[in-house]
Length: 335
Image (cartoon, rainbow, N blue to C red; front, side):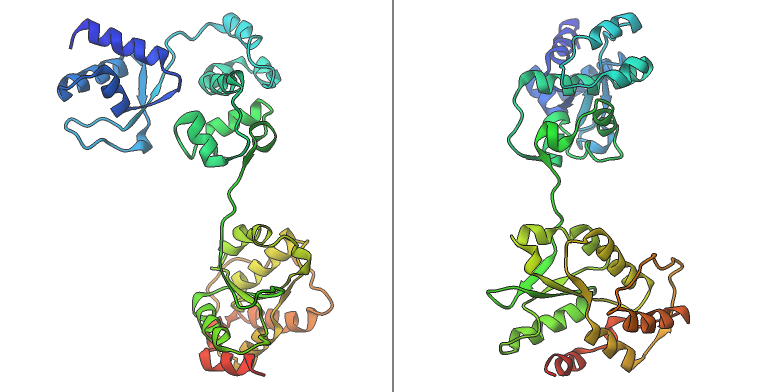
């Protein structure tokens, strides 16, 4: 490894437009064919604190190994007075009041702040972009705008908003959905896979009119996060009548309570016929969950059924949906 090789690499890093660089990109730009020479070169700039590995990027599989991505570190961080002057030159979209009061935080966050500055200086804000797409665009890492990450904390410290300032949206988690009618109004959400599969087979074979126009697989607690997918599926949610059916246990009822609390614009009720069938069969087992029921005030129409369900849970018993088997469901839906 020659001094000229080292100088070429440091020049590349200083002029590189992003703070994360692929190891393969470095090797392509330097046109270094001897991997051992390339390894020694990268190791030397790591020792000089010009690069640090992005450890979750994985290793490149070569011997000796390098990480697949590296973070470019600044070797010219100004002192406090210089940083105060630098703040005054940053893009006006950035609210700098937090960092003006916490210059020590600006020192540690500076690389991320400058990425946001450069983004707005370039003036190429996408018309619409998803959160992970924006994260990769900014940092070459698709998960760096999750709420727990430092880049996201810096974004909030700068008074930025993903939707307002970046035209950014969060993806909606989808759910499995099967329609049985061209006009959808009555939809049953089913917590568990086996009863969902049974219902699909039964409703698929039934002649119209069917008790439900569509069914949704709730997949346990997943439905709490994916429920807003209804907004993507239907233009007018006010026309929908949703019914929920799950296990008679703390988890199952808490899922329903969460949906009722968080999605008040929807007409959502318990599927009383399904729950009553479970109560009538009355094959219980001990409750293993240590969590408590959420606070929830049932409507007047819900109270009679809710009293029965809570009485079962109060006795530390549960009834799984599978109590109502395929034959039971077939008879239930044909009534």
